[in-house]
Image 1 (cartoon, rainbow, N blue to C red):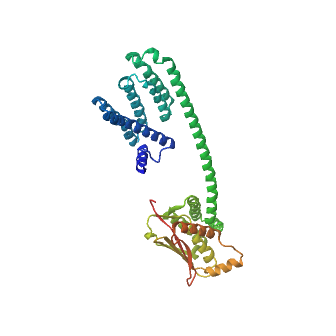
Image 2 (cartoon, rainbow, N blue to C red):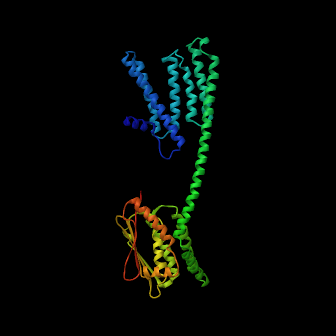
Image 3 (cartoon, rainbow, N blue to C red):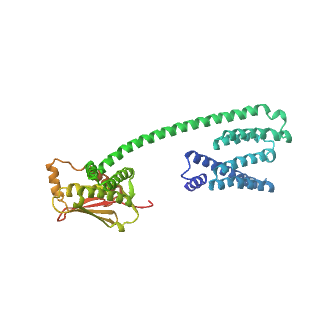
Length: 408
């Protein structure tokens, strides 16, 4: 049973692709179903007439030709020629119906099936001229052949009620079609409004995420350093760092919208941040980034590494009184992506003591990232998170995060 369902789904989905609108997909599926059903119908008639010994050779050839013609609509759909497939089906249906009515099944009052033609155009086309032209064609095909072939007696053919019947049915179907389109438009509008509401909520969450990454103290200090360069009339240096600061802000805003980013993007953000911190500390600050050449073209969770480097500078190096302030960052690509950050600051214990004396609470960004890493750990079921290792001088933090290949 499942096999039959899968075959049916495959047939009606011929030519359907993800980039098409929902409306177009519906029409293609209806068209494919109609073409398949109409192509199957003469084959069934062929089998029935064969076993009842009522199958002349000419009729057999005609039935086979009809099936081939209807199935050709599916081939046209497969090659994504949707408008051509729709017109081909309507023209084939009209022509074959004309042949049946006037020659194959003459005198069986099957002319009323002509009403299906204009109603079919209401399903497949939006152009009103197409609807009205095929309505006129259907009425002409109903009357004109009988005028010349004398298939029915004029008294029994129903000349007077056919036009009102055809027009009434056409107008009724057209009305319900238009009402359905209006309801779909209203639904689409409501969906857009809902999406806008979600975007507003998402923007609020992204601003919270951005707040966690962009430390206001860092921004203030960076602007102070740029201001100092301006006051010293070092215009070129001031312009250079102001450009880097603006680029850092822009990249932060862009990356706050993404869950995963290319490693190169995260590295670019980190370098701009460190260059601005270098401006702040002048010759008393040095940083090194290692292991870049060993990292493949991968994507990692956005905006995680920078806050840990920022914590090293803010809590470790800032309180270092003597000697050159150093931070080394080493990247490793193993089962998970690993970033090791080592600074030669005062160490994590002394930093906690200073924060306690100054009544400072834990970093907002650290809390936000810890929650995010916990979520990633639960999702990926792997060794993800961060940990501190004791070293003789300063602080060493190991950050482990997941990564995906470029194309995933």
